[in-house]
Image (cartoon, rainbow, N blue to C red):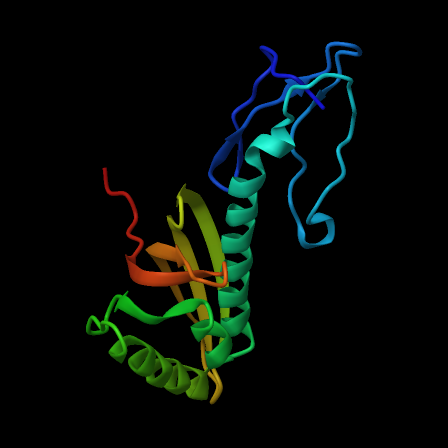
Length: 196
């Protein structure tokens, strides 16, 4: 385990500042390894005989929740890539608020029905590819929000030039009774170039 020392870095991982910790015995520095699908529960890199809690122990719940939201965002992205409406909707709560650009706002039970109809029509005409750029995930207990950009490329199935849309988004999340993170509110609008 590493004890806290003056060695720190503003290493942003999923919107979280991760401190570097230094082993007093050997001077080696380490931070929590990046969490990926292949190293979900990474082993500790170094052990020391002290009773101080490691960065892994301190940040585990937040990192697990950040990881879970990132996995849900990946599912959302893959739903577009595979044109799978159900896969996209599984990321949302059973009832949610949809304030998507260029469509009427939808609330509660109406939102999933309208989003389903919109996506079915979209995927009937286009092959989609979505690039998700998460700027930050902010955890607030069993609630969270994230924001960033969605870059959607729509290639007409009937032929023609692809359509590219870049939007900025804001999502509110809630952890359900099973511990899964679900989107409760979705908002987006076009990302406009800076004119100043």
